[in-house]
Image (tube, rainbow, N blue to C red; front, top):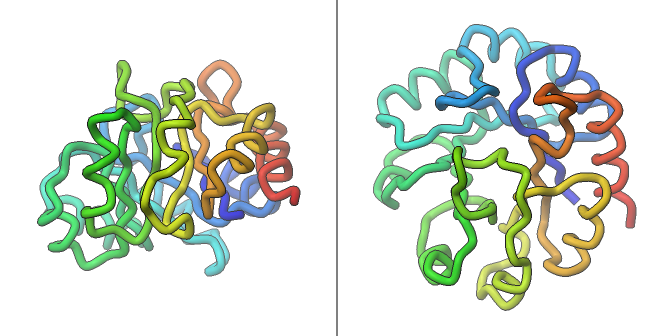
Length: 200
């Protein structure tokens, strides 16, 4: 089970995630309380082992700026978390993760989007992602997409991640607010989440 810890802002939390077995770390380059600048992201990323892949999260950003930030920070994946057209994904020289808010209207558009992974997330609330709300898992139960390309997000934490995995059989899970205390990453919660997600 792949585990992505998103919204990393400090070396301490990045290292805690790595030591606990995280596979991907997400860095937010869009308006958010988890926003990080490329220089700070680069400092954290340079301390990571090659086995841990890094993901830059962008929302409706210009492709030139995405590439500039990705090169400066040293990103492995670009996560498009807005309303980006498929042509945007095709034009970027990086592996692509595309996030989709799961509703009956959006589900049919997912399979035609060019991406290495698809993040199934909660419908948009006050912000794009990181809202801590669970979507109706049954909506994605029969989604005609290779489960090896699906990463599950939206309101996951150590108390519900195993149930989510059992219900939808994704290749991975993605968490941000579910490993925070008072809006700040919590080392103990990061470790517990990863351990629980990777328990067979």
